Length: 280
Picture 1 (cartoon, rainbow, N blue to C red):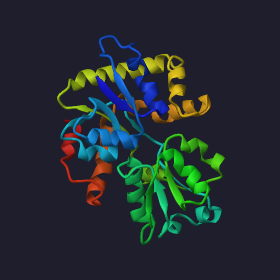
Picture 2 (cartoon, rainbow, N blue to C red; picture 1 turned 90 degrees about the horizontal axis):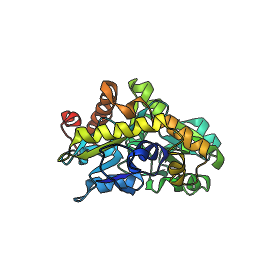
Picture 3 (cartoon, rainbow, N blue to C red; picture 1 turned 180 degrees about the horizontal axis):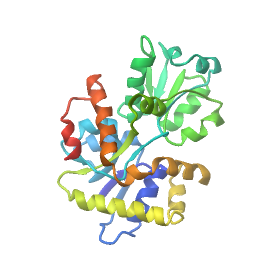
């Protein structure tokens, strides 16, 4: 079975047991490790993987071929994207300073960018200036060096941005939670509709439960793919992004996803689609 997910600690932690043949009855996996911008593109292609991790923001483009699985993804609280700047005075003045400025984002179809656009529509009079797409690991150095005015960052950058001398301008997760009282949907696990979706969800849950029961077992695998992160940062990443929604979206998870994509449709950010397709 072909699968694609990111090398980030939350994904490698969840899928470690399945990748290493520790789940009885689960098929062998042929794994592609790629950043979310690439996996979004893979899912949108004509020959995408059987199972793939994508941004929730990319779901409307792929729901005809893929179904959203109720487990394995990333939703949560206190784990949203951050808008960073190197300008201390700008950080103190708030979002309005982004009007007409250059902002780097990790992907135009990422949940982070979708949230940024929803937030900026409320918070930045007249809108931002130029949007620059670049790999997420390049964003903080570019902000630090003054190549861009602000950057939208995700994942472990929550823990490491002070090392670059950067200042927090906005926490989009906190904004979303205060605005909706819902968790923030980040990454989804999808599978081809032609496959046994119930079985795949069962294998993913078994892999997650193995990881929780044997947290040390996946450590070497996680760090191997963690792009030079320390053990402490990798563990903090896992603790933040792997939670009860990773095991089961539940009604609150589906409510959050529906709220996000409904707003995105209203703003014309994603194509219109039948929200009922999220559950079938």
